Length: 361
Ligand SMILES: [Mg+2]
Image (tube, rainbow, N blue to C red; front, side, top):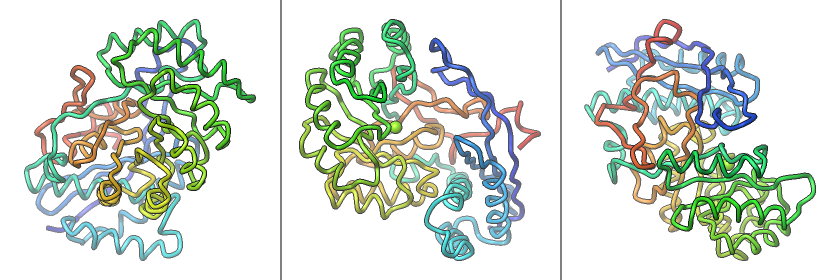
């Protein structure tokens, strides 16, 4: 089989994520770079990538230049194709724009592989389970007032989620009392049976994380996410050792190496993997295996329409972050039943561009 054509486009996708129902949150339109890759056997693989801020045009340009290099190659020899792309990027091949662009290409190649095999990726890549817990994310953001928080928490509960998170690190100065009060408020509303996590977005020092983290123990958190800078492996390790609450980090790690350093240093109890930051499915699966060797479970960051399948495929998959940022772009996103992503039997990603975007992609 050979790749005969590639097409890269930028489309504006209205984000109707569940968090848009939260008071004060504006719905957004996100520029998404789409990739369609066709083969001489009539199979099509798709992938997407985006930058949460600007830099969409450089991303599209990078993806286009790389995707053109795949034409004529065998899409089932994924490591051979991506090795050529890494060679092309030379010294830029381990992070940044290259890696984000590569993630869409690698994902399209895996889509073709799945379609050729007639299997969904969750099955092709290991097939451990067909459903994975979805954790509700973004609704209980730090911008939501304590007054509105009760209503938002009930709203998430009513949608059947059993895993959810709130954001702490509320202001410029850390007030442990305010942090604990807010977490306690949520815990009282959702009950003790809910797996409640807390995201700090790297805003605390190591000392603050340990001090506030100890006080949060009474709330019974299922995880504490990014308590301090993600590249401070030793600092994260100190937090992990000091707190019984499982510490999770990794969403901003580029490729395998930072995960190796993190795992060797004992920095995390749970590794969080971002498909775009690690450069696609091939690397995602390698990181999951590496984490498994360290007895560490893995969680996906954003893009559940692609990554819930990966969490389902591997033995140490724990849960997948629920975000509907790009769901308007697709038909075939995973169903959510009783708070779980339930994966389909459709081959590859099981996704196609929705009719509204079909002609634009
Ligand atoms: Mg996070």
